[in-house]
Length: 377
Image 1 (tube, helix red, strand yellow):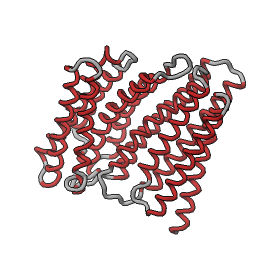
Image 2 (cartoon, rainbow, N blue to C red):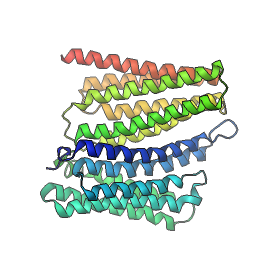
Image 3 (tube, rainbow, N blue to C red):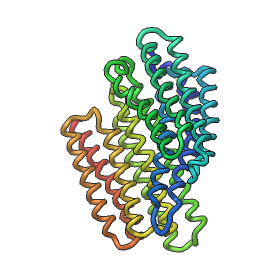
């Protein structure tokens, strides 16, 4: 069986970090799409574009990340694959624009280039390995090749219909590994601690982007009390996110999970998307361009999406009683956030309440983890 123990951790970690930095630049550009408001609201088509752009970015990054987790070797071919993918990510990032249709072909060339280079690595493993690794590499390589070709065919489709073709290819990419989870992928589970580390690296860089929003807000605004308070509350949100995410990740990192890692993989789609929403909450906290109701909905969506992602990532493998209690807390916080945020009279009040909700959520989850540790000591 091939495992991450075959990889030079130091070398791969630095290269993976370099790889992540390129992706996060693209994610940051994507999140900036939501910074275009109109008449006090973020238009529905802008929100849709955020999703349409974000999902292919996440899936392209995820595809190679999971390949390296299962089959990675720090050799020349893998390094070249990293650098080739980075070049295609730059093409994708340069193609992200509100006028998405005009840049769609370049965006798809970047996306499909990344996916085909991942397929190449699976085919290489298919040729080199024997037994279960060979069977799994063959299955995933062929599945992802089909999905990539279908997605690329979307450039031949006029109008909005091309997005259905694009997402049908991505849907197959996601569905086929799910269908093979027990019969195929279970024979070669992911290396769980390394997978958490990889997603943790990307998460911490995205939190750094949130800090950059705060820095830009301070630079662009007047050095008054309101600006400083906005920065302090935004930093408090970032700290709360860091505290909750990495405390929770550390809590499950030592668990001996033998799985395909799909709760971690798919849960982080919501995590990464929520961080983009939260970065825009902080942005609009500095720039009062949204109505109170629109700002409240944005803040609620950011919190609810993050809390949902945390439940998906961190709860599998726990006891039914633990899962039940955690889900009750999550639902209670989401319900309280909906009531509080949507009833507050001003954007400043909503912003302050958002910080309080994130901080309280991180604190409550921390207390629950401490009690769980004592109960199992």
